[in-house]
Length: 318
Ligand SMILES: NC(=O)CCC(=O)C(=O)O
Image 1: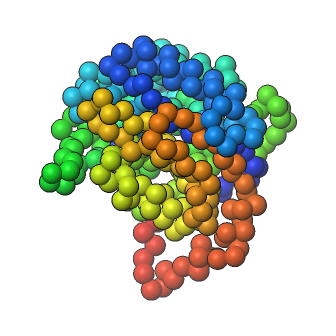
Image 2: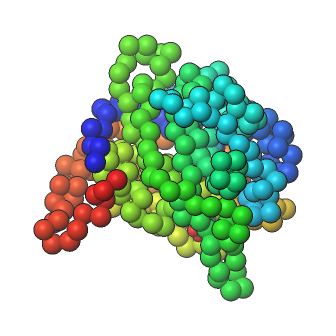
């Protein structure tokens, strides 16, 4: 298991709780690009200085719904080498995200998009991550599909059109704001998941055990399960792994078929909520502080007190 986690320095994280997501893909991308600019300019709540890492929500380029996924799915169009080569990508979403990261000089977790993989003819719910140079550095396909049935409240079956991914993923940021700190060598390790993935503690645990200091899950809970579980899950995943944990939702749109919960939030490694959005479109910012991370782990040292002589280490084998 890779535990050679990088040293990380304090940085600012911004979550864009994006609104106005419609069937007009070009308009969605234009609006998302404008919100990225606003996040970098410090608009929203809690900004103290320029964010090094900016996040969009689940399904930021299309309405969230099983009928919309096939209509709006895009092929990422990468060649897998040592890096992902997206020079031939025809995806408008990938092109926008890559150029936005480069133009703004930020790390950008581009929420998720419905992805079409022509090699297996399947659709995935996929997050992509870009460096300040505009390179695609990580891809995460939602592992656990959102198939639930709460009679009279909500029935949703992502598996009618999507397929679950089959890998756990994290990425190392490298220096944040490299144009301001050209000789910096620090880096943060970020564990990735998408929405329903948060209900499966093993996924965040594996990332944390592989050295992630922060986990970020774009997600779109709904108005039934959101009030019950959204905050509880974010705080639980933060505390049980002693990591920063962020959930980034779309804004609620009552004219859409799916009513997202909103309430994007960032929780610290002690399980304390640092910032939370309401239901409307906004941007929330918080500081990610290595000192707090170390203090949590030193004060309550569960990460080194596990009893694998009593129960198995389920994070082994990845
Ligand atoms: N987009 C999703 O995966 C929704 C998950 C959700 O609402 C839940 O309750 O879990």
